[in-house]
Each structure stands twice: as structure tokens, then as C-alpha cells.
Length: 92
Image 1: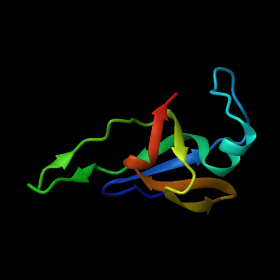
Image 2: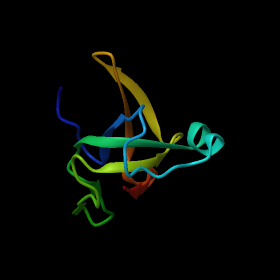
Image 3: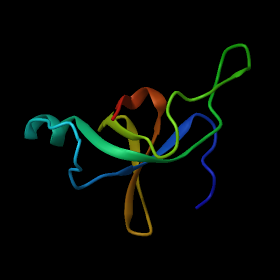
């Protein structure tokens, strides 16, 4: 896979519930929130002053994110979401 650039984050969707996961009602989990693992990050967000603001999350973090916050993509049969950091709700 090529490198993610700029203020983007690549998250791999997690289909199976893992131990220690937050349990959500079916309506909430299927319609609004998803769980995933951060696979790669760009360099960070560019501020108005031209500086790069580093991400608050890091590679391999398990995250809870808004299902409408990114662009779903598929690479080699695996499902991913390309998003900005503000779509992430929590690090699990």
C-alpha cells in the first residue's frame, strides 16, 4: 500500500466484536458508530499559520468513529475508511 498523505487517516473496519469492546445497541452500532483499527496516518493537519498539527491518535489504535465521517474503500478485499481525525469519537 502507498503512504497516506496530509490530514487523512486510514482505518480498517472491524467486523467482529472483540473482548473489551464497548457494547452498543444494534440501532446505534449499525447506523451511526463503527469500530476500527488505524492502519496508517498522513503527516497531520495544516494550520492557518502553515504549521503541521500532529494527530492525537496513532497507528494501531482501536477507535470508535462516526460511520458517515469518511470515504469507504476496499483494498485487496479488505474494507477500510479514509477519514479525517475529527470523525473519530473515542480511542478504545
